[in-house]
Amino acid sequence: MEETERITYVKGLMDGFYASGMFGAPDETMTKLDACTKGMDSKQLTAIILKHVKDHPETWHQPLSIEAYNALNGACPGVLNPRVK
Image (cartoon, rainbow, N blue to C red; front, top):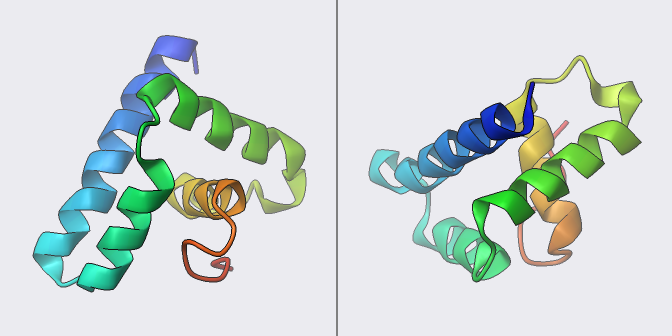
């Protein structure tokens, strides 16, 4: 993807992550996600996810949503839950 497409994807992904609260995600999880990403713009989030994906070719078979979660978890150790496999 081109950079603008990646940023657009990440914006939608983050909207989905935040919308999960409406579908029953625990408040604690939503608070942790907010604490992890507070102050980050979409370019920064995209860069974090892109770096994680590039650094972990062994997980390229995983859905990008899972890898994005793992990227954020790596960027905010101890804030989110353990890595998803």
